Length: 460
Image 1 (cartoon, rainbow, N blue to C red):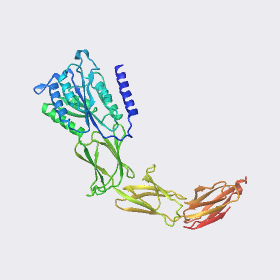
Image 2: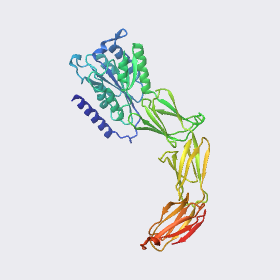
Image 3: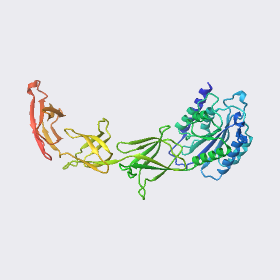
């Protein structure tokens, strides 16, 4: 029942946050860091010469002091396992000791002095309660830094809670600092957030500073679109970064090369695992991208391209001829390209279905790097039909000595212009019957030819 109430509380908060958040409002981006400190009984164990809690409080106080002059940063403190003795197994023993406000650094330091380890380790419930600790602010970067020396003791699921918070966009991927942890300890927390192990006071101090630096520092990214010769020179392509955790779109960029002909540098959030979609034709996708925070990251993407040019001369400005482009031996359409245009594609083999009458099919058209593949079709002609009666009829062409359907005629046509490809070896055949005739033998046939740029007239 407690677990149900916990999840209900968490999802209620997530829903309210979503409803109240208004991403349209322009806000200056604020970073909020919530320190989640373990004060369970095990924190009285030694780390070097002092207890883990003494070391944790001292180093945390030092960090809080160092953050006083940082702009656009708010911090808060939540503690668990510090209100009731372990024998009580109080799985609700967590409290927001200092909420998010400006200039609360000294208050946090004073509160830390009074913390004394007592109780059990309740990770899942404490993480869930962190959600409502953050003000509703869609423009903020919300980060949890969990400091603990133990694993879940209250039958909760810290991984599920962390995932729910991230999917709802409440927090970024948490940081977890494990004190004197074991292999099992590490495996238990890897699904919760970015895990760091600290076995000594010195390593704890180093890890804490690294985590703060990663939480605060901008991370730069360079997306290198690699051509067929291994050079990062492909460019001018839209690309999208998605959050792998919740599928949310994070960034859109149009790739560019800077004034030194190098891929331009981007600044993006380092704590998210990304799925990158480069919108070439077809798209190129790179998944599970993890960035090194505070560093310059290079993401290589194989995206060699060539060009396809479709040509038809003498086309009337009002006429439009298109081709469907598909990967060789695949059935879904990648692109619709107009004739008399040029478009880039990832190198490879493609199948074309040219939407003329009759259809023209081309298989295994090769697109090669830095080359323009030209496809030219004959200038079409026109068939002008005039009928004074309703008819049933269709136009056919010859293929392998058999008739192949091209198109049907409108039953009520009186005047109709149909654009057709020029006749090759044999003429087209028009087969029709007047609608008022009720005998099949009263079917008529007419052969006709179509020449490029000319109109053929038929009266039915």
